[in-house]
Each structure stands twice: as structure tokens, then as C-alpha cells.
Image (tube, rainbow, N blue to C red):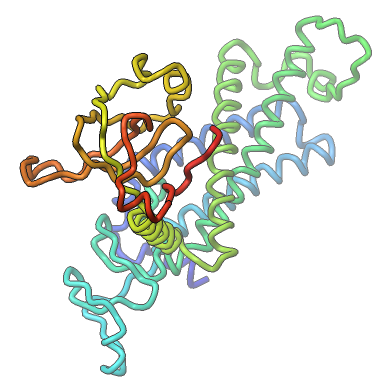
Length: 357
């Protein structure tokens, strides 16, 4: 009941402006189109008042719509749970373990992050979702996850209704040569002229709603899968991103430590598939969007990885290079360089180097 009151009162009338955004407009538009067309088509395909199956089908359809909208508005208006402005821990000594937010003029609670769009610190922030025009955090993460679960299930049910409606209506009007197929034509037996005529406009609207339902099932279903992976690991999307970023920085640092210095012995123009470097070099050019770098005789390269006939590394820049250029890196043929004597003694190879491609 308390949740319902918070949704009705919105805690602050300014929260109504969250609806004036492209995310909620598109999301509510898709829900409205799919739900409306599914209810209309269910009347054509499976009349709900004459059979038990039709009644159950119609009630389930309404139930999907109500639960989807309830969790959607909960996630939008209840909010993620903001850290109070000016918040400080009860024990002043604990502040040394917390970060301080200059914008909110408060300490950040554990696992909280500052959202630049909401301009507030959010408790256990997962991400800022444009589809609800709000952050997903401590208070609304459960509602948001339920919405991601219910939306694909409801769209699957609606897509089944769309397919069966188009099939039965076309079967009643056209001959496909499927004389052995038996379909429940309860709507046709009830009244040769249905209450809602299934003409060209209705067929086009049903086909459009089917496309929305299938697209929503795939897109939202993938989001639900990603959310469940994060939830089962007891993490948030931001925490997972931070861990991946730290791992990437660590790998880059390790590559720099294990890099091998090469000296350029022949010029290289930076072409993708150089003909003058040999047939094997030409046909084994790396299939990647990473750039090639131009080499001049006498320059030095720090190679971090490589293939049999190609290497990838950073050019060692001297003081004469412009200050705006920080790093020049890319692929270059192996036969254009030779290992420096100091690195040849250690007999190290770039990380990821392969004898065979």
C-alpha cells in the first residue's frame, strides 16, 4: 500500500516531467500498441465469452499489461534511492573510508555513485536508464528487473495472438491448399461477420504490432539476461565496468613491461597490404581495423604483440615530435625491423606472438 501511495503521489509533482522524454514515450507507445492490438486480435481469434480457453487467454493478456505497467511506473517514479544531501556517517571516524561528493556536499555511501544526469548520488547505482528516464538503484532495481522479465513474456504471448489471428483470418478468406489442417474457427462459427472487420488496415496494424513484439522480446530479453548475470554475481553494472577497466589497465601495463624494443632497418609506407615486403607478408596482413604505422629507417618501436609476419607496437617518440601527439601505434611488417641487442640477449617475445597465424 505504501508503494502504491508513493506512485500516486509521486512524492513530488516534479516527477511527472519524467514522462516528457523520448525514452518513456517510446516505451509506453510500444506497450500501448502491442497491448491494444493483442486485445483486438484476441477477440477475433479466440472469443473470450464463449469458451474457457478464450477467457483465460484474455485475462492473461490483461494481466501481462497491468504487471508490466505497474513495474515500469514503479521503476520510474519510486526512484533509485538518493543519498541525502549533506549526509555524513554517524561515526565521524568512518568518513576516512568514504569518498566525498563536492556536488552533493555529502559523503558517498558504500557502493553509491554520482549520476551526472540526475545530479545526485545514487545508492547502489546500477546505471541511468533512458527508457525510464531515471536511475536504476537500490529502491527500484527489483521493479526494473521484473519489468525486463515481464515485457518479453507479454510480447511472446501477444506475438502468438498476432500470428494466430492473421493465420485464421486469412485461412477463412483464402485457400492455401491445407485441407488436412484443422483450426479452431470459433470466431467464424459464431458470426460470419466479426464485430471488428479484419480488413487490409487491420492486417497491416497486426503485422506492425508483431514486428514490435518480436523486436521487444529480443532487445529486452538480452537486457534481462545481462542484468541477471550481474545480479547473480552480486554486483552492479558500474562495478562490473570498473573491474573490467582495472583489468584492461593492468593488462596494458603488463604489456608495456614485457614489450620488446625493435629498430627499423627498412622504410615502410604504412599500406595495408604492401607488395614490396614479400608475398607472405602481403597475404598475411592482419584482418583488423587497427591502423598501420609508417616507419622510417633508424626509428625505434616497442612491440607488445605480433603474428608470424607482422608486429604491433608503439613508436618511441623523441623530443622533436609535436606535443599534441602522445602515442603512435599500429601494425608493421616484421621484416622491416630487427630486435635491439639489449632485448635480443633476454630472448623475449611480444605477448600474443604466434609462430603460425
